[in-house]
Length: 161
Image (cartoon, rainbow, N blue to C red; front, side, top):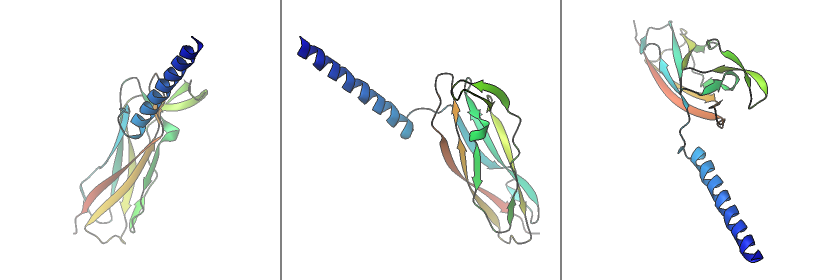
């Protein structure tokens, strides 16, 4: 009887650990849907030399989920002749976060961040190819997700006068 109990406990432990492993694998291999996702686009597809425009980072957030404002990072690879200015973020909501046990700023609904860019007279090419990496983390009502990072390539044509 005792041997059967030990065997049953080992069998149950093996099942639980293999289930946890499968769930963790789902997070790392993209099998579990994350309830928020970014996209990056140019405000204008064509701009003139020595002009300004914005890269727009839009976050789509499913109902019942939220992103932490302090987890958002925007890294744009520098380009000679282009000034990348400070991103303009919308106002976030303050909330006591039960996961971190602190007051945090969060975004509940989809929103956009404008990243102003400026062409200087040093830029002489016909197009700008931006490579940007967006980092973020958020939660649903049931759990918090691991920090995420996505890379985007965005192109803007430069019209010569």
